[in-house]
Length: 465
Image (tube, rainbow, N blue to C red; front, top):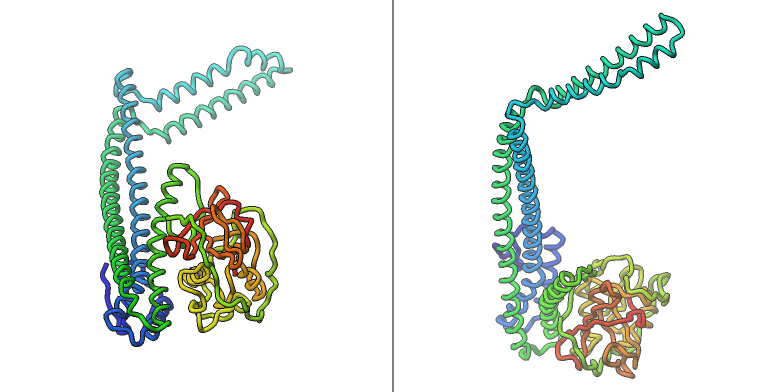
């Protein structure tokens, strides 16, 4: 995949997945925002952050789209090659069957004439003695007898003519030798088509493999750049630069975690034969087993509701099948008003939440998904009340992208949320068995973010939008 640099410093992919103008403008805007946050940072470190952001936000998604398209094309070509081979095999079977018949009756045997002769014999036997006697015994006069016989003969003659015409149309003067020659010609044509489709399928598979290799190369590059950036983050002194680096790093982590989750889901689906609802994004495949201690948020004060709250409330649902909507992904990262209500977001953004905490992760992940989230939602356990006051839809039904709110002291899996702070996480997948996969932050986990499977999800409240 060829990469070019625009005057604005944005890397633009020339792969098959060409970004729209609005996407291009958004990339420039994001790049400029990052530059503004990185004022005073060394040029080397600034370039690392910008390059990692471009890899994660632009190059990898474009390569993923191209790889998916190539994989679909390869599968289609494979199906067409299989169909062509099936047609060829059917023709070969027809030839084998016909050769058996020729061995029994000779090559000049005419199936069409034999079929017509049989129809004529059946018709003749139909005008048997009993039918003639029926005509005689039911006739009152000689004239009536003659008329009845003529009518029966006319019907028989008409049926014979129709049968002969049909047989002639279906198989005009072709004996078995002629049909064998015709089948052999068809086999030659079908073999040529099958060979061509097979070659096309092989080329498509090769293209798909090359696209996947290009994608993996970009991902490996992103992993290396992320490690390099993390090693130098100590050089960042301003809060805005630290926040910019954190967001870019986590976006890169999410892409890496997505692949782990997708691979695990594919393996589980292949072994169990069950379908799962996969999120638009994933989390770490590692599971944190210890409690996310200190899962605190910012101050618990919430903004007043400046929008409609018609969809507020806590209507419970015991199922984990999820609500019937897709992650909208259209609420801007700086929007203070979205989906008919105040988002509670301020200029402080993610800076209102402490490092590595569950509230910081929930804010960052929701922003990544394009969903509204407030800067001052409070401690994790109180997010549902704050969100409901702002006009968000809050209920007990999990859905991909929703914030799962754990009350203070509430049991999660093998651990219990802090009795003061509570906890928040993000629903990454709703499984077919009623469990959910969540991603979460917290200093008690070995990674940021971490993930785990939660059963009986209706025990918790969920913030939607």
